[in-house]
Length: 304
Image (cartoon, rainbow, N blue to C red; front, side, top):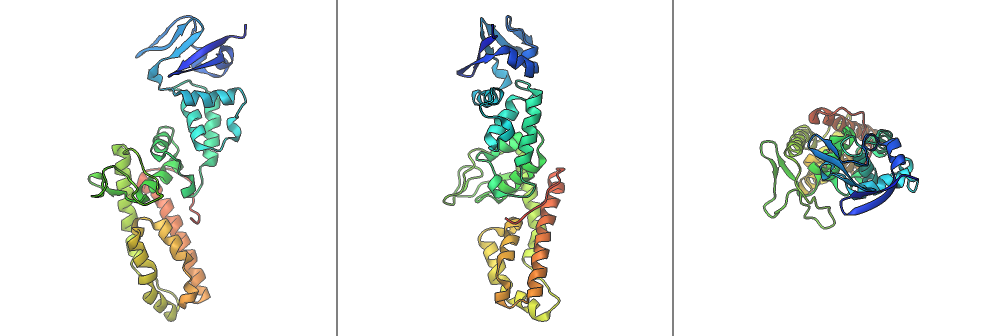
């Protein structure tokens, strides 16, 4: 007998080998399939002949089980997986709070860490950033949390206030909406704690970056300093005002770096010097966000 059973999760049924699951999962190895298992809070797993019904209290999702079984049966191994939604599914379902597959859980954590950029990368932001932030918080991925907090703060239409949390624009009826065409819409509000952290981050970004943004930089050459004095308003300040660049320092600094300053009259030595200074400021801001958000990461910022 191969030990096959029917595992029912939500409205789906999976035919699996119990011996295989028990070999990898503490949950299944400690469960007697012939009787209902009573744990604190009620029945964790109910047995009905060869059909196992997972109790809803474990919050196991059928789609997550599907990802897990694809790995166990070698259809789609997680070791080569690079898609965040699938890794997130595997992380949830293999956790001690759900089906408790410790080795697969550790493998998933390692693989997920490998795809989280060591610098801010807008391309990394998952399709469902709210769920990703909840997962990054629950399973302690500080680098992902920092990228997501920055994403929420800098999303079009987002407004935060340190005292009251998320503020809606007058024309908006939903939190964290993105009115611009083609921009992603955040479908549900953040938790109060995440909202406060976003508000705090926005406040710190504005406090730190405003003096830098509204002050033309000095250079070793008077002629180059004059170039900045004349061009800073039309080339830097005005575009930043138009697109809320005051709380998007990484993007704004990248745009400043990409301006053809030589065409405006800056010497090559000053162009090079200032580009290096602005890159260093991007790194400083990204690093200081760890302190502002109370995180512990080892990340750097790269060009956006």
